Image (cartoon, rainbow, N blue to C red; front, side, top):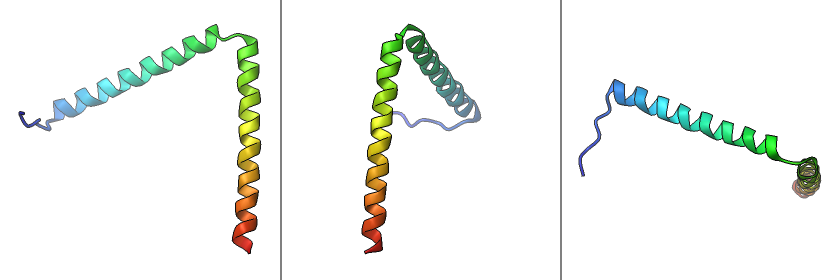
Length: 68
C-alpha cells in the first residue's frame, strides 16, 4: 500500500470533503423533519422527556451515593 502524502492540497481536500459530508447529512436531516408528521414529533418529544426524567433520576441517585 502506498503511503499517503500529507500536503497542503490534501489537507484542504479533506476539509472540503468533510464539509460536504456534513452539509449532506444536515440536508438529509432537514428533509426528514419536513416529512415527519406531528404525531412523530410529539412521540419524539415524549420520549425525550422520559429520557430526561431518567437522567435526572440517575443524577440524583449518583449525587446521593457520592455524599455517603
